[in-house]
Image (cartoon, rainbow, N blue to C red; front, side, top):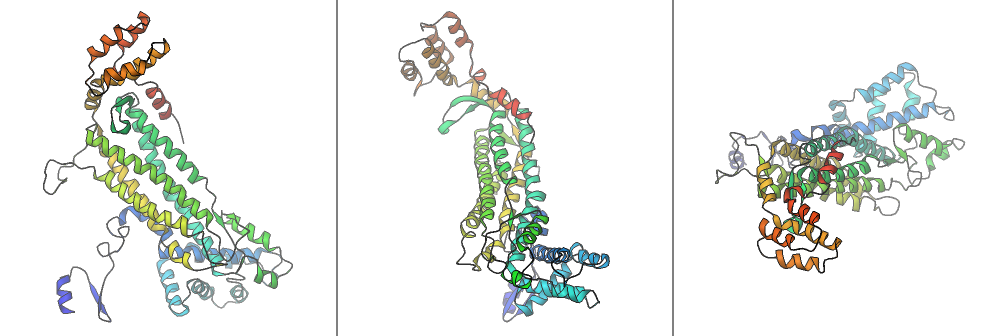
Length: 482
């Protein structure tokens, strides 16, 4: 043990338990990069997806259910809550702290049940006043743990969507739109199949990506987040036997809607997680578009179309001093892949549960924050990379100006208009596998049996001008709002 501690060289504080050394948790000892190397980038998710966040949302659901029951006229044994007690209950939710979460974990160490620990915590906080005993009896009334859990997770994912993910998506979209606007008319060679192809504009290519992201973002934004509150197997058994005359379907529906969620009336013990799979799939589609984008930008940097702003003391390679690597886009691509791997597992696993319930979903759901964390880390990397990106207009224009072969498409299409036999085959013989210069192409055009005005128009055409409606499309997109 002493040798092991010497090897650690006191780099971290350690405590000895049953023959093992346990390092104090820090960003240097965290198992997951989301809590280690990239911890500062995912702080916005911690309030939602940490253990503290899950416990906090459970407490919120339990308190809101208790308050909801007190307003239900059929529950005669639970009188309306006084204003003083309403404040007490609201403060349990509004002032919920790390110490409160730690107290619940201490209770859980005895109960070995995380949701029951929340119930006992609330009972303790209510104290022993004359108004509290009836309230204590109705804490967690008629509930199964999954009634609390499914709503807690739904609120977590909804909050993450509105407070973190959508704002992050809008930031990235705004940055892309700025680049669309700035480079709407800058001609650039396309590279279909990696080969020289008809010109586009830099702005139009950014618009293509932003438009795809718009649609994916819209689908994610409008996705229905569902919840259930109907007892141990989804049939209101306990609630119905306690108060046969109460309209539990309406009470449950209205309660779920009061939390800003969509009720699912047909469930087993668990909400079946179909909407969670849809949530995951929507993000997978968004991430996949970003992966495609990162790879394209990486390629354009390799071609010299884009340069990267250099930081004075930054090192690109440990051995090759000249290098400025596209690490932000590579980092983003890798983290998006990790996000998608987890999201794919969520989508495939969570909707499957044996009979009325098994517990395999529980440990999986605890990783929501990790998957979304990788997405946020990737998005931040892309934003950082775009901020460093410099479009080399001279290099891009030169590449287009030297590519006279791309006008073969234009010439053969005009030839088709005027009925010239075998236009494609003639241009294929002229251009494929051999250099095409301005003079070679113009000599070919002059020999064509087409109107002189058309000859003049084709001869005046340059590769830089052969961009179709790219600039118009980019400019139009740059003016759109989301």
